[in-house]
Length: 134
Image (cartoon, rainbow, N blue to C red; front, side, top):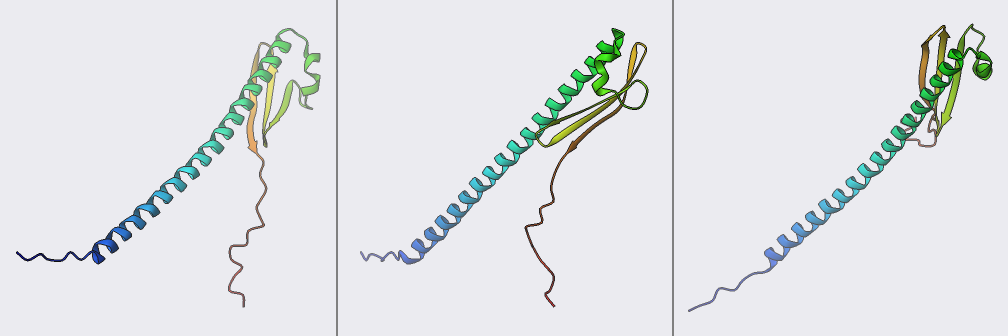
């Protein structure tokens, strides 16, 4: 009986290509997972800052209500605006700020403004394309 020789050249080339493809896909998977984790961490920090500001804004509303119901508006002199019975407080935290304006008359208050802002600076360092250069 005659044996047929096995040629390992094409098989070795196929296994090499498969190994390179699997390695590339594994690297892309880990890179994408790390980018997703960083994005999720950034979002979590933003949400935490926002909720902290919202909580402090609610505390300000409670403080205004307690001072107004006690009949002692002098406690709120630091928050008084030029308008009658309108109090304003700006709370800053982590590059974000919350501005709360409330009018309190009698036994009830009315929120005039509840504005949450995030500060940012334009990134002008990156020059992606400056035209055709003519």
